[in-house]
Length: 56
Image (tube, rainbow, N blue to C red; front, side, top):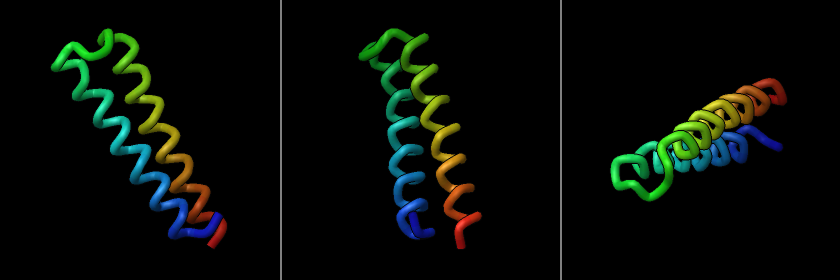
């Protein structure tokens, strides 16, 4: 995966994580599931971004 692709995937995962966090405000998902999924997306986004930098 090249650097541009990893940045794009990381940006999408970060956006999804933010949407999970916002969903708790509107009671779309139970808060424990939404917070867990949001934090997981943030962690995976950081890993993808870091792996993209290593393969430059």
